[in-house]
Amino acid sequence: MILEVAMLQVKPDLAQSFEASFREASKIISSMQGYVNHELQKCLEDEHKYILLVRWETLEDHTVGFRGSEAYQTWKALLHHYYDPFPVVEHFISVIP
Image (cartoon, rainbow, N blue to C red; front, side, top):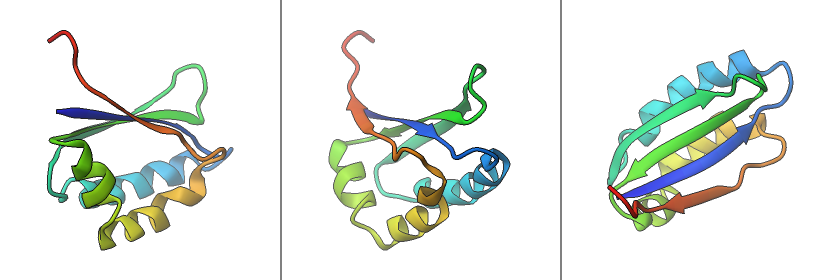
């Protein structure tokens, strides 16, 4: 299993709108092959910072399957305009269960 981690910095005054758009976008990602689960958490110290955690069966389910899909274009249209700067996405594997 792969854990995708993205720190999301949302533009000022757009947090509420971002959260509404993310609810809609959640339907997209959760329908993808290899998707296991995801969560979006909001930072207590910075109201414009979120962390997105997505579990995938394989790295390719995210990097090829999801990012190469039509659905990803809709995801981008819903969410990418909220970020400044654009987030770095990294992938992790468990070393100690």
